[in-house]
Image 1 (cartoon, rainbow, N blue to C red):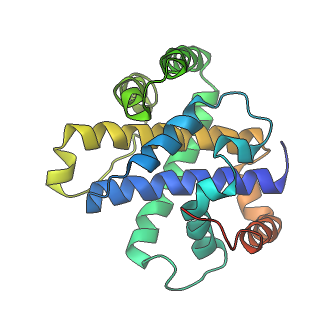
Image 2 (tube, rainbow, N blue to C red):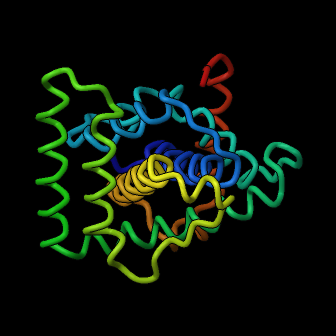
Image 3 (tube, rainbow, N blue to C red):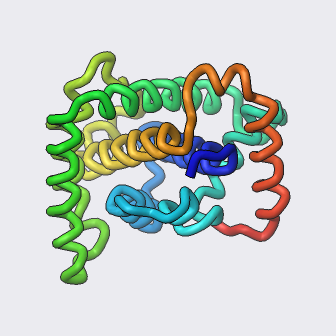
Length: 214
């Protein structure tokens, strides 16, 4: 999976998770289809392609729009203040993904927690049922790493325990997408030195995704 297309798809996954964290924390936007997508992505541990993690490029439509705003510098696609927060969270999630990959014990704990969630899903449990366990898994693993992702939002949203658990699952999915990005050959220096290559891959995906839906 080491190719520019896979890297862009994984980055779009990180971007989308960061955007959904913003939407839930700041705006109180909660959607069951978003929960279903992130749970599916977290539980997809042996994909053949990067696309498969997100059920195709349609599964990262919003993330692709964020990347378009970032990489193509398209004004108005995403509000500037929103884009700044999402971009900051993306950088944090990518750094955390690198730290997670270097900790064998943490990887084992994550793997066991994900296998437990997979077993529950095999019995037909709804995606929402996996949120408490996955949120606790994030708290026991990724959240112990420094620096932690500091999510700011409206007090009413951040005092809602269901919203907070969902935010943690979005962050866990963002780290999972960050790990996928590395598995596809992504690295911080490539973001700088191979920006043109990534931009071309992003534009090709966006050009072929004119009919994708959220």
